[in-house]
Length: 142
Image 1 (cartoon, rainbow, N blue to C red):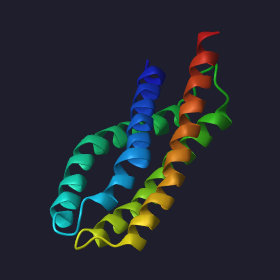
Image 2 (cartoon, helix red, strand yellow):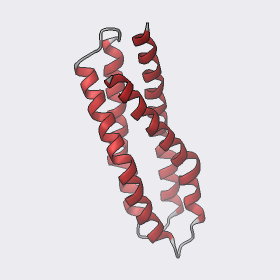
Image 3 (cartoon, rainbow, N blue to C red):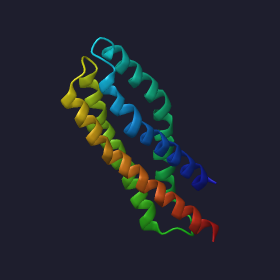
């Protein structure tokens, strides 16, 4: 049951990161300097409220699965899955969040570009995790 919940949370996060990466972040450049600080503040508040609990659920369930490997799944794949979660958390904490902090005072095109380009690491890590989750579910159903 935990594996199903874990996969659902991971795929919810994949949907969110794809919307952020392909729609939301590129549109930051169109907000305008006058409205930017308030917009960025609202973005940070609202996205944290939505993404924070999902990321925590994914982290804890990935750790649990890596420590209590279901019989049908290869141990290495759960370690890989947890490692990808850690890559996402490190990227979020060391790169994405600080860039949002620096952007909160005023829009800066160079910082915005760093945000968009750097976010591809998280996007790809989540897509890889999604593939692992589908594979795990298929192995569990056999």
